[in-house]
Length: 137
Figure 1 (cartoon, rainbow, N blue to C red):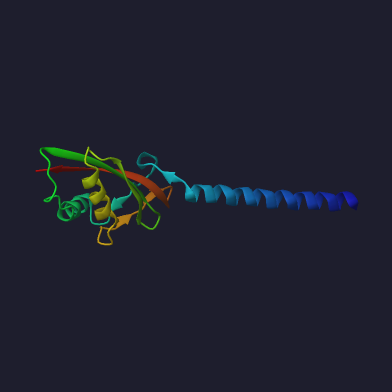
Figure 2 (cartoon, rainbow, N blue to C red):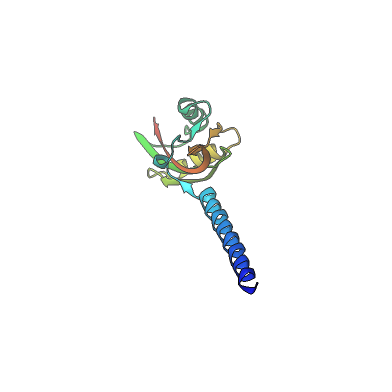
């Protein structure tokens, strides 16, 4: 009787432990930030990348900034599972931190086009994304 009781307790304990490990693994997967190339379907602006860049061009007013030639800014952000853009940062300011800072504000605006989240194995996941912004006068 004692052996049977001990075996039942051990079996139940093992099942609870396995369930907890599965839950922990699932939580880690949900919080992980994937890269573009790890996904089955990458994140993308709902209205397309062309309209997304059109929005940037129309809202990133650089008329008051003096520069010659081209400036290339690289921006990194996260597309969340709900399609929201978060953690917008400048990866390369192209030598013009003032204009790069303005680009971040444009992307953080509530007017910024919405995105579809990236998908991995049928599940929406958080994804890091980088875009270059080239400005010329």
